[in-house]
Length: 306
Image 1 (tube, one colour):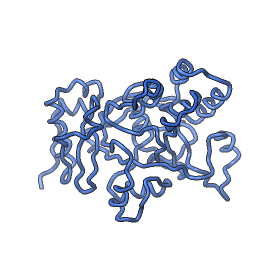
Image 2 (tube, rainbow, N blue to C red):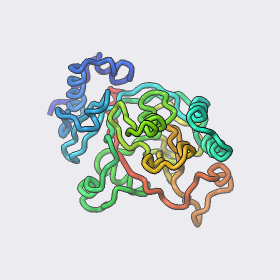
Image 3 (cartoon, rainbow, N blue to C red):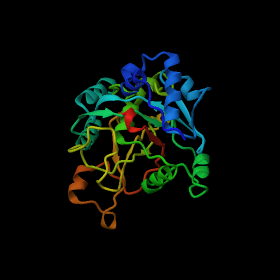
Image 4 (spheres, one colour):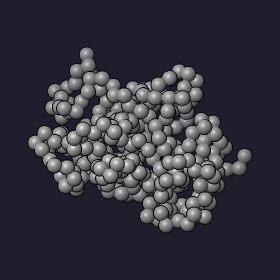
């Protein structure tokens, strides 16, 4: 078996930087998809007839993983500011009539989404939508039958398939569409225009609750500046998303559409009780039960792509 092929220098650089990637010609993208599939080895191939999600996206690059029969989209890397920034809050206040309760809620999330930091995102592959229940049953050989999980089940499914869950940084990069969008895929504008939010990468349903690969850390103090999952923390885990766009009743609910928002897994202390410090920090955010959270898979690219 031949060793994986190194990508060509021009495409290598383009995959590392979103700005360069979007400038690639159609021919260069076809070549890049083939190179990525070859580098990943047996069982991967470029998709010649894109899925509907890819066909309507500007910069979708789909591949097929034959063993799981799943489609993944290649996502180029780049650099962005991660966390709930002053610009995000200002964008919220411009788009939404801010009230006392919404300001208080934003302040709660600011406590767990700071300090804002610069993160370098490595290119990666991700399923364009959460794994549906029929694929869950097939991949797990019937061990799991639903498409929602607790954190242990979500990670178990992904790892057993040879993948992992998205990191918080990867999910926020997707939610910001590789740019500094304050709202996940500009959801406020999309919903008011009565259209589905669109990702330039062809990624769907980022507003739903999804488990991340990361452990829970109460703030970003000491967080890595790479997009790798941040482990060695609280095993309760962390999930992202939580806005059902089809059921928005008031503008104040768009707080939960902010791309930087994050949530801890449920209480896991003795008898389900959190420490006093955690109770203060997570007041109004922490839940007693696991969310009905979905899962999607990420496949990191070989190190020489990063």
